[in-house]
Image (cartoon, rainbow, N blue to C red; front, side, top):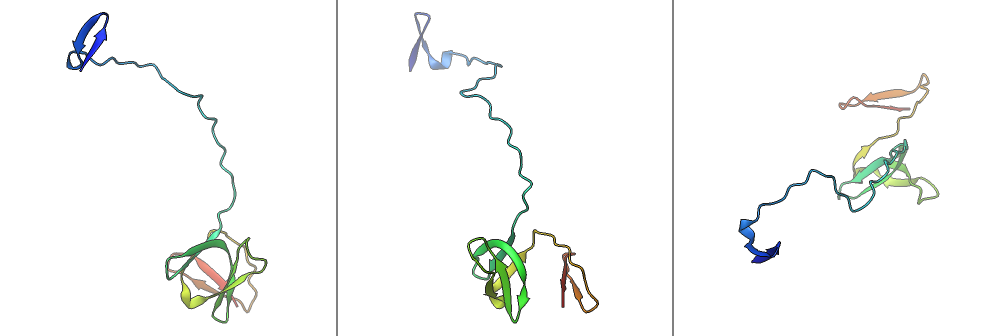
Length: 113
């Protein structure tokens, strides 16, 4: 292929690339976005791979209690169908004398009665 450069026909392989160190933009630079300091929700993962975000509320009689903004009340989830729970929200719990603490291998703790 040939191009016309200053009234001369040149083969493209005869033309050296031009270098520019100028910054080129097609639009204005975006403004920095401030990160929100929102707490991340907990995540409940099922054995089939599905997951849902929300807030872990406890375990009662073989059911997990899970709160999600789409539900008016905490939902009961069959505990044996759950693969894992990722707890993101840290809650301070005042332990009474009858409370117990389960220490997890990961370093986490579960308080309960």
